Image (cartoon, rainbow, N blue to C red; front, side, top):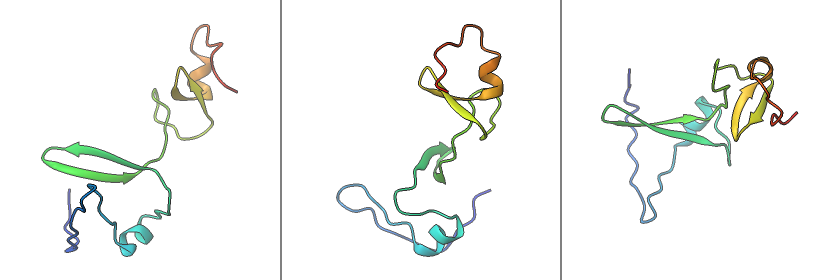
Length: 86
């Protein structure tokens, strides 16, 4: 469900918008934090990026496997997973 904040911002000539301080504080978004951008129906959604395992969705004990994030538990079940960075 999308809720309006009543805040309107213009897009600048480089396609940027400023996220108001009130929203950055509410969602614990700091300078240089990665923001995920995706489309949901006809809306553009911004969300603070929190990396997760591509298999189970866990955000704990992540390692990289073939340029993807996988938790150690799922990585241990991948046959021949010698490419996992530990």
